[in-house]
Length: 370
Ligand SMILES: *Cc1c(COP(=O)(O)O)cnc(C)c1O
Image: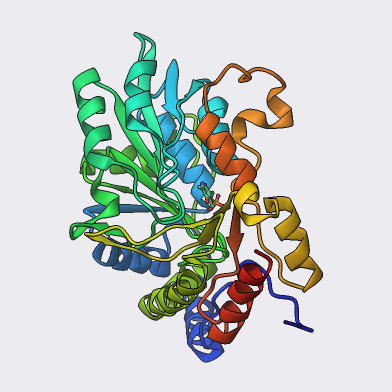
């Protein structure tokens, strides 16, 4: 396999230029660029319908949405969470003055191990912040049961699960609130953007407050907030992309099946299969490499592919507990499964426009090294 062109792990979807231009004309006409604009409000409503949740509040990015959720729900003390995630999840907890307590993950799908969660609860615990990983949902019913019995808030980092459903139930309907990211690298994007999804309509006011400096009127500031509003150019991109997201997911599904078909029986390569009852979004194509069986380590495979102009990603690596900024603060966390996954996982190129033949070639190359 020889590719002249660099193949990156993902490539942002862009809608037909003309469709975006139409929205630009509207923005010039309205002369309204941000602060609850017409396009912002339209996207918010369309996403409520598409995602099947009662309430959506839009933000400038997913991270600030999560930050606001943690603030607005009054989370403090200890928060049980996972280290197998992006920097955002752990940082949002710490920046709000709470202490993350790390539970290990399940090797089967890399989501937080609900059995470990319960054992970590103390009288200081106020919340669980769980992460749906690669498009695979957490055990939502077990986590709901634990959170309810112990009176804990349940917040999901749902950045990876746009459009996912469990037995027909939209992913954003689980827990107190879910954060979605609409970053350019996600299945659905608004260039930069994010949202909170929630059932309890009484939360809307505080989310709106926190995302706009705590301002409630021309002369009243009720809370210490931040600036996390989505602008009209981002909302316009979202309105365009929403028309194409079903097609994007369908294409990703086909490409995922090609990878799976070729890699399924390769010794030392674990792939993730569909879960019965789950409508998947094919956000990522992770493989877990057992170097003893496969003959090459994850890092070797990463290098071999990079030499062919195929750029994969060690995602998530390192664990957030192992970040330099934390020193040895979380060295005692018992997160062996998470550390194994972080050291052995590679996500392969996956996006709607990836030519199926390219996925086939990448998979066959990986197989040929065994
Ligand atoms: C992308 C992502 C985020 C952050 O989203 P931004 O919109 O980039 O701020 C948070 N958590 C996870 C798991 C992510 O993948």
